[in-house]
Image (tube, rainbow, N blue to C red; front, side, top):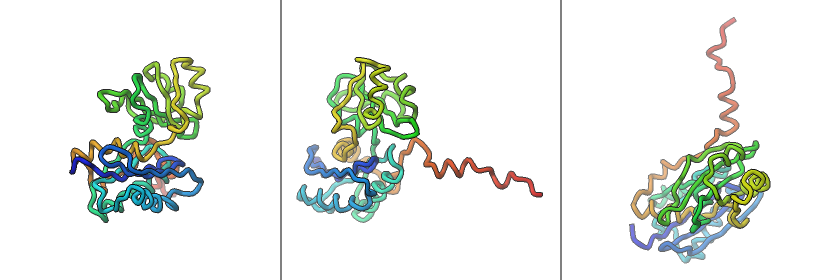
Length: 241
């Protein structure tokens, strides 16, 4: 892998759809769209335009990156399948990174802990707790899906909160933690493709990029359809009449 890596990254984990190109550790181009439409309607056009703005062809890209979750089940599948298709077609290495880490790394440098919270609905959040160590993001606890109260029980105080979950539950967080809680600017509350590329860069530089077939969504929680199927009685256990 050449030292001046050219990385194309996408993030489709939330209602914010983002594509970015990072060259030699610096942002070359980025597009972000917030839309009620499914990301499949505009992602490929965004990728083409981002490459054009960076004055690059897909062939010139060294590696691909994508946020693998947690996040919207449909959105994650769209982003991952798009990067898989481009990687297979172009013979490119690729890397998957955490959506929560992409939120947290946008807050660095920061001297205290960072808690990334994504709204998981049903009164829960996807939570990741991190701290900066030697310029890198260190995970302090496993990423989990849980209530906001449970998420706050394990944070290292004082703490900076970021993400649409932090925005949604800001009043409750302030009530529980008071001045120990800080909040990132609202423009950082959605993961961005530039941060996905930033996290993927050391993986691709170390030639740790994986075969695209190995990219799988990191849901943290089962999709509703799977939960419904698992809750059905096993037909084999029903006695014959």
